[in-house]
Image (tube, rainbow, N blue to C red):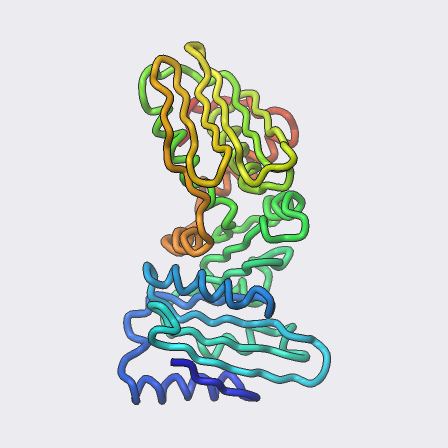
Length: 318
């Protein structure tokens, strides 16, 4: 069911939610958090769809602030979606115009679930320092997406410089499959030291940058991040060992080839992940992600400074 509330305010939307709960039952009980989405009109429906998908794992209240034109007088158009139109969540869409576009926190505050954690998500352009943003200050978890920014590489570097505990990025959760596969391979004999590593991916792929940063931090070996034009995302990873290189090659979007010396070549599923799946993964934890921090801050610094092999560390990719 969809209920439109044109030219309204946050308090009227909150009252309408209470009225709907009394009329149709406890639609808001069991919600474990509030997800605040800040997005523009063009990307709003795709973001709501991804949030609805994530809500099946994390029942929540989704507050989507759609930033309209900043010109003209202040206006707020509200919309409430419940039932089949809202997945396992209740969705409130708040279209802000005029001066309200600069103050999304003012329309969000009255609608936060009481005594429940807050997760903020910017599907496209995010604040320079998410933790200092008014909405970011409300949240225990702040999710950005460097791949959706106008300059993904520069944006990821800026994230490293402004990192605060609670920050994360969908570019990180997109490489969960790569990290799991690499860790599983290195856990199998022979347990030889990796002497060098290489990640090949698109020039503006923050996921490829983060995977290279993760390996640079974890392995402390010479690390190459190769930028290949005409491809999308990560294409391959190669780890050098005494018995021969371990290689993972993914020419398409779903199937990768795993090559390990002394074993038959294998085809493994390595799908490009949907935003909803990545969002659900990042909503599973509200504490700081120390592995992401290490890959982002230390790993990217090692790549940038060319000293990935410096410093003592266990030679494992976990």
